[in-house]
Image (cartoon, rainbow, N blue to C red; front, side, top):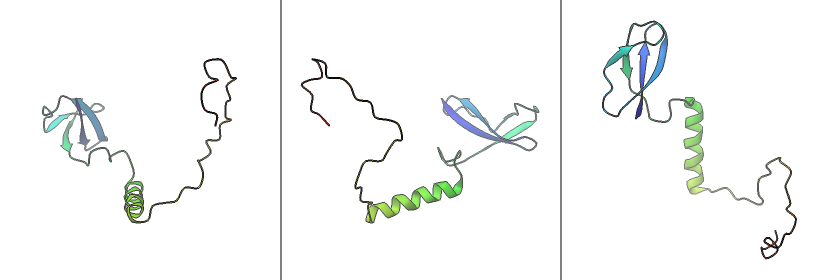
Length: 95
């Protein structure tokens, strides 16, 4: 199954899921019923803003030549859980 994007003149963009290769050039709009034409967009980038996509590409390009140095693990903000040593866990290495 693939997700195809259609543009209605009154209601804007909407998605339609259909088997690959079966999408017609136009379908009825789900809201108003008028014919909506199929539009083509970059796959998987449609839901993000253009500036976020550009920033991600710039960051990836920079890290190719100037990788960031990590000095410590990032904090998750969640308290760490420690498990009591049971016979099964006793043989594991300690952090």
